Length: 458
Image (cartoon, rainbow, N blue to C red; front, side, top):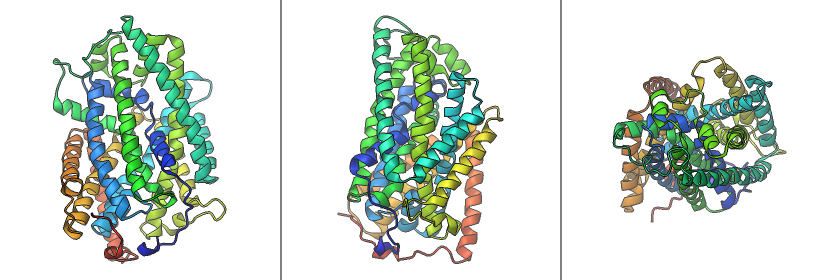
């Protein structure tokens, strides 16, 4: 850390397996449960294809994260990589756009979980479930990253167990002719197939993959080499990509009325649970709904809050955000003020979403827009830093892959919801204004010239 002008304040306690588990939990092995209906509707009944497109886009970005994490093994994710790889103003814009993802995604997770739990235990209102989830996760994150790592290991095992039960019960049901019976229509349906349609669906499906980048925010708590960050991202993406494709294929075969779901969508967000009920009755409905609530509102939100607080900490340490967010607890070695701020924002926005008619759809689209825009800048950063400045000759990992990632992400963003595009661009313009103010005030200088960093370009 000293070569970059910083003091090591966070404890390096996370192993390679811890990083993979963090990525798996952040992405949620059963993430498609909550958004299956929307992806099915937007993809014309081909959600596995939408997930394949999203996986390809994320793999290119994972390569870029891996390369930049080796060059700059610090907290801050894409904010640090673009800021060090290109310049500080661009880094701020990248951090500003990823904030749209990081700040809002804990709110999204808590909101989804509260809705799911309210559907099971309606006597407890959504707003109270929201408060309970936020309070529990904040306490665990405050007590330290090691405790959180222990908790999420248990949660990961439970999520994988639920998924295994669904896949087994679902495949048995399909073999018995339930739902649509065995079919490959989920991979190709001539009546609805359209590339723009599928890329638009991928802009929603990509929400399930966004957690892989959260691993990069734990760089200063990684006890292994800088390469382990990139490897853990790619490993987590590959593992869950296979699971996402498998579960959405099985669920697609169990949808009782695909035409109606394609035509009307899934405003209640229960399409997956209903498909599970076709396979295993009310028990499977309750099991999948309850596991979604716990996975999104507890396990996933736990790491989302931890990652977001590290991003705020990194930006505040560089004077890009208020200084109080850079405070680290001496007892627990966590960015305490940033942790509490994320909790407060999640609670306030979550309560606000309870009164909006389509709050869930709006915030999901906005989260994805912010993340994908930041990933565009990340891919540019790889080319600029390694090819232009370091004269690297590793053409595939430092040029071809980042360019392909940029192209795929651009097409996904182009086909995203118009409402998300409008709000996302408005956020971008605001970020440019803030960046200009910070630049004129002299707060856009690196603590140590980036040329002094030890990078690996061989």
